[in-house]
Length: 525
Ligand code: G4P
Image 1: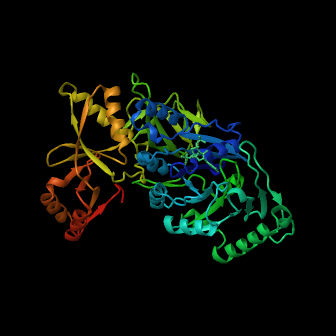
Image 2: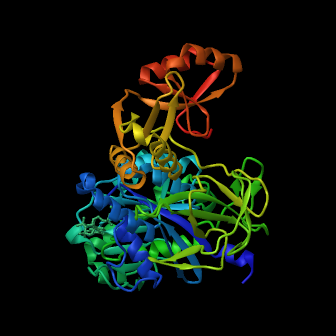
Image 3: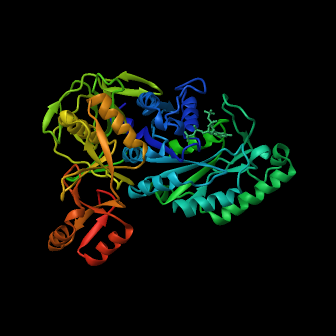
């Protein structure tokens, strides 16, 4: 198979959801379809459960599991599918943001009873930044759920995206009878089953008298009315609009019961994009280009504190990545060869000789890589679309052991490269501020600094609302701002100017008073 065919048959996507909506279960069922696993329960949950907040060994153990389940590849109907796993715990949302930068599309799982929840809204904002194509799976129809029209309204309103249902549920909870496949006009009858894959029954269309036979008169009538209404409300799926992230096809089902998933998967392989071109600071990179390019989107530290090596996950953007071939590490300006690149099939990993655009390669890293680093066949490229987002929580980090200052500095440096949290240096007092998305990260950092670097830290609270990256339309305004707000000026790890706003009010005042400056909550604008 040539490069073009290999690219066209690849789909690289992420599944995101609010914790407990069913992401892990859906992932597992997709692998079951692909024959990548044979029994349910084979995929370990990658979520760090709430009970683990103070149990560090548990966190470490789960971090180990998540290496294995970081990427899950399988084949379905000749299509090579790569699922990129995202941490379920909301304190690790930053990791999820970054994984999304390597996805060409996304499936969002929503609990039918709960509707769109907080975490999903946040993740949707990230998808919107890159106009990521989205498919929605409404899960847990085997439990009592709201009216499907209300669920769709909720998705449109909360996720700010238009929807087109491509399957439709018949009842829910105890009255759940199945899903009607609007796309293929067949009906899949529900029977609770965790292991088997259920086939649909063929009917001509919803007006077929067979429908009454399968569903009973009342449910059949309701389904006919519902389908009639959907035709009036939702336009047929426009593929271009899906690809530009403005319309999301919606499927209904029950992941646990392996139900309604085939409908979605068949549609997914038809409509989801194969690897897309990527922007760099220099030019657009096309997957079909002959020379290899890729970027690091995730770094995973070794669980074993005696070995500080890590795995850098690289998304192949163009060309063919080959083992033992010298490539340019653009930021360091040096050539590197990789003798043990790994690929992931289900939860197994193996050494590979080559990888194609859309694939994820795990590279053994002794501390050379940072999130966002480019590796190329020689060209100096800087990939875009891998932004940092303003953290939610901030604390000063102080050295608690004067004998270990070097270890602490190194530890902080490496953990930040991994993307565990963000570091800002206040330019007024030179103090280091760590910003995180959740409280758990502070505990993880403290623990890892001690166990991996032998360094002790102390946290001191700092009252901040947001870190804002500054874009200067007027250089004079920037110098003036820096002079007047010196106490609140910091730099991020790349040396970019950041305004540390103490409150929403303070940020509003800054915006009002400095029209020549733009304040962004992400580092790329
Ligand atoms: P997450 O990764 O999004 O956090 O969710 P996960 O798949 O772990 O699912 C959360 C809980 O919801 C699990 O139950 C799972 O079994 C259940 N679940 C998932 N899909 C469905 C469904 O279609 N119907 C029903 N009724 N339940 C579903 P748990 O008790 O929290 O975990 P477990 O002990 O079963 O693993």
